Length: 102
Image 1 (cartoon, one colour):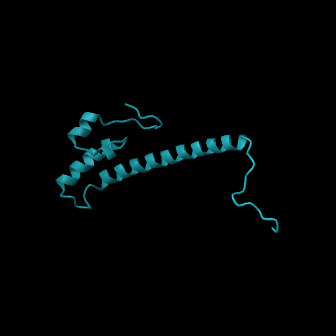
Image 2: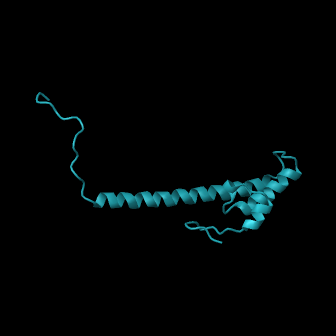
């Protein structure tokens, strides 16, 4: 399964994520790394110095997704700016009219 607008493919299936009880908010292209991380965390009683490799790989994946989305948004903003710059601008009508003495 592929997600629109993303270069990464979904590796974990819906059934795997349901079985691992991954919350809906975390079911993205990095869920295949979150499942073993959560299993490791539970088996190691959530000790922070355990499961460092799994956590690092999951956080790196999430960081890459965020950076990809930021680049996509930057391209969209540039396209919108180009469209807005190419259209003729209507004259600006001031909200507060000038008085005779101004």
